[in-house]
Length: 462
Ligand code: NAI
Image 1 (cartoon, rainbow, N blue to C red):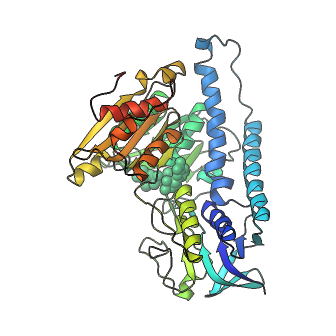
Image 2 (cartoon, rainbow, N blue to C red):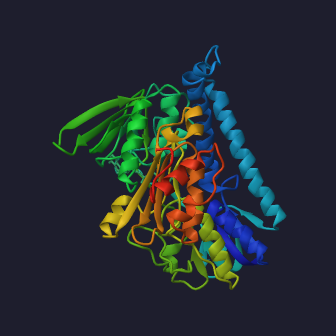
Image 3 (spheres, rainbow, N blue to C red):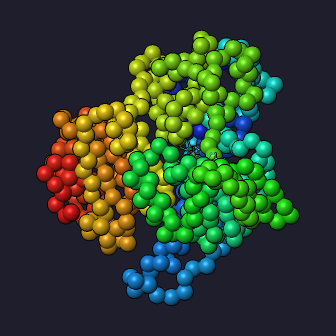
């Protein structure tokens, strides 16, 4: 039996970042991971591989749609799907090996296998039991499929199977117009599939600022994605080849059937806590199946903490990473902290969509006096040069104090642009603070400054 200061269960962005911070703070640290490679869902079957496919398919889109206009003539590239998957796998390997290197560098022990907690202070991995003063659960999440719908990861797939399809489908039905459905739907639409997205709500991307959501739907429709909104999927029946999806339109209860080669079920994720032994330990759970923690990530059992997708809050890799760092500080006797008011959300389609803080709908609901500064990428020289004029930056600020309340960007590199607003919000900045900051020309960032200017006396290039 070996003993550690901290054993972390799970090596995703929450777990591995937590381990590195624990080691940096002088704690003897081990991580339990049963997968063959480190990095969890994000690096192996989530964020990173999907970004590789988004990048490759975007390059194809550029070649097909914009090269000729720039004077780049010749045959458009054809898709070698096997090679595209190999490129994606290589990107995964580079990233997961990188985490292994960081573990070695920081003297973190990888306990290979699936972990469980027989009692506080002990972690079992295979036949071995290890001791730990502190146990941190960072086991992430898993797709929450619809009841009665059988996933075979070949014809009816979750995000995992969608990254490994045997061939590009002719027709893909996506159930759920959330982040996963739209990112992967975009990939296959660009690769030539006919993509139909079926969504229960009357709008796409629940929780997103409504103006951005509408613009996003319009842009994606222009790219060839078809949307069936207000439709509740009832069942998916697989046949020899392909599947039949039955849905009911909520407005009139009418039943419809659509056929597809592949069906992607992207209806959300749920915490993954199977096999940990939490019930026997008496760990308190929320009514949504998440591990209940206090503001220091402590569960009701002394010495057991939890972070990331397994607890309450947005299921985002960077939220888990920040919690990983914060809980490490707490365990080391310092003061870990996460500002939940400033967690950006990004959808990596093209254009990207990014947001932070309050939406216009939430500010209205709170009865807060606010102002809006908006700027279209059509007025941004760099965006026009790069065929990226679609979209805008929208900044919400308090009407009295001018303090930034939130920002929503749909446009080129939105996922990177959002961070200057995040930093500004961390410092409690006003829209004027952003507007008075010199921004290099010509950059997409100027659109953020222009939106900040629009909260005051007006944008210059509008
Ligand atoms: P989601 O919660 O974002 O969207 C699921 C959608 O499915 C919702 O719009 C919902 O109304 C719809 N839906 C549910 N039941 C339905 C039914 N029977 N018929 C039709 N529509 C139905 O979930 P998603 O996209 O699966 O993502 C899961 C989690 O992973 C999210 O928390 C997301 O934030 C995270 N994620 C984040 C990424 C990023 O940050 N870029 C990338 C991928 C995932």
